[in-house]
Amino acid sequence: MTTLKFRNNDEMPILGLGTFRSEPNEVYNAVLSAIKIGYRHIDCAAAYGNEKEVGNAIAEAIKQGLVTRNDLWVTSKLWNASHGKENVIPALKQTLEDLQLEYLDLYLIHWPVALKKGTEMPEKASDFIPLSEVPLTNTWKGMEAALEQGLAKHIGVSNCNENQLKEILATAVHQPEMNQVEMHPFLQQEALQSFCVKNDMLLTAYAPLGSLVDENSTLRLLENDTIKNIAKARRMSPAQVALAYTIQRGIAVIPKSINEARLLQNLETLNHTLTGEDMALLKDLDKAHRFIDGKFWEVENGPYTADSIWNA
Ligand code: A2P
Image 1: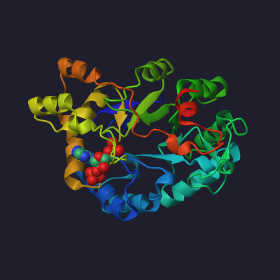
Image 2: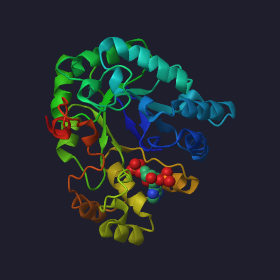
Image 3: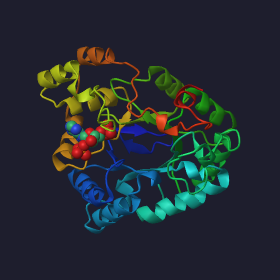
Image 4: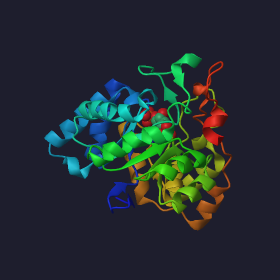
């Protein structure tokens, strides 16, 4: 499978399985089926509430001899309630126990947002800790410790903008190697991509199919006419066109599915190539539209706004 290369030449499969909003009872079959048909990259997070079931599926795949641990690339993410350098390793050890793994291939700070210990999702201002009290640079020290102890082979961040990356880079001993952000043809983030490329940082696109998190949204990526027309012309599905576009920009994609046919369809994107003309038409679809808008971090008198997260 096509891969993205890290600085030490470790290779991450460019297409992985997303597990956000995969219910615990569904994710076991999704992960096992995905590995059976050839997925080798699984994207997880403590916050998804399903790492035990993902771990059971990985263990079963190894037990059945489908793969070895070494064949897999497993990413997970530090939840916001575990920011602060002393909290990173305990949180990572819990994730490793849940996933039944000795190490992660990649560990990311999930959001540039800090929450009080034990908070799942915030409801009031006192559930938060402002980043002025626990700066990202402090949490990054814990991430570096995880790397040095071999608990994670690579470390990075998620949902970070250029300024937040610069802040971490300024004091990092080990630089972040990955930024995982929302990306698809409606949100192309070209400036962020140039910054990451310049700083030798890779990108992973979450919600690469435009997510269906907002069921009321009238904007549907996979129903866009340009995407549908290219799909028809190339004998691809609209989802494959969306994924291929981001892959051909050199960005990893982690489409989530719990459905066997769609798992296969998404993986088979790798058998297709879009033309330069297709790429140019898709480039024109950018509308800087976030399906995951970050508004869930806004509470009355709270320290974060969606705008502060994306733009501060
Ligand atoms: P399902 O799990 O039932 O397949 P994203 O990764 O952008 O967040 O999108 C995930 C959403 O897209 C899920 O609701 C998932 O549903 C759906 N999905 C995954 N693959 C495809 C596909 N090939 N075509 C259409 N919808 C898909």
